[in-house]
Length: 503
Image 1 (cartoon, rainbow, N blue to C red):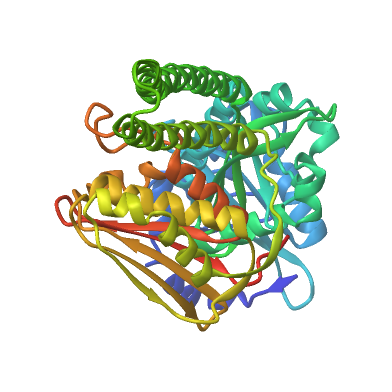
Image 2: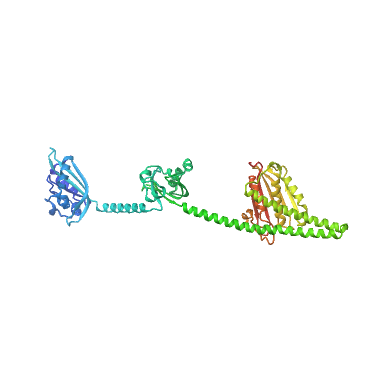
């Protein structure tokens, strides 16, 4: 309850007269306007002589006056000392404005009611902005609720679901009452929940502003769907994290279609490789078989004509050497084909034992002595002693053989170097370098694939399996293969093997 000395009215008038943003004036106990400041004149439109002496209900719309609301406001102010509200008021020209009104009862020292202080502020602009904002929020909410192809919802700062649109209901299956308030991790698979994936996603979105992925999510009925998920951090004007916007789209059908396209592409590629392989294999097998047939026919004819002639026997011996080489060639082709079958079916077994890598290289080099002579290739060995590991001897022999065969094939007449060394981290290095035609950098990775060839089969024979078999063997032993090469400058093929591979 406020009290004033009425001889101080002049001081009060001087105090409030210059205030222009607020209408500040006095009412007598019955509600008659007694004073009028500049702010009241600007906001309400009345000059002092037009309003002083009139009842303050003139500022209220007709329905409000008929309901005796102005008198009710004064009754509350008398009873409680103060009345406050926001509502529509009228200017002199009849236009409405949204106002904040505070009415304070004024009592003198003896407690007698002497009138009321009334402060009014024009909040029309604020209300207009608020209504625009509410309208925008309503339109946005209606827009989001009408979206059916996307689950669009809000999370609070802890990850609890705060809103739920029609799309979320359709895609995920929960009704709003069933999901709002629950942590969004309920939408994750059991394994992702156990791994704390949802918590990590919130952390990343909070730190970077956004998180996106494609992954499995879970519907209400427990079924999984492949989802594209975008999680965006929402912050207030001070930068405080207040929650997250989450947009989820069901891409299960697209994923299924993509997988089907990939499957069909793989099947088509497999058919292409098969047809290409059959063409190459038939050619590669036909060549030594034709040679065998010709040489066997020649042996038979020569033997029938002069079986006891020493010259005939020498010629037969030479032909038999050729036959022996062609048989070896056929055996090698068949072994390669068998290795493809074993590796593809997962039956490439390893017999691990203590093996001296340098010893294996020497054995292969001795076996290729005649072939190196025919190709006019000199072989240089740089072999460290005691490079011993737990490997499969026959498979290592196969690796060295394939590397050396390639070097002879693509670098005839040029030297070949084989290096064996031990690395300090428990690995061995086998490297075979030739000085032949070399390989383009674009083909470095591809040449280790099955049936891959970096040269025309018309000029160089083979099934395109040797390096693939090498890679399969080396990787089965826990190692890696690589190549360094440039066209016209030869190639260096390397296998890096752990000395003690896992079983």
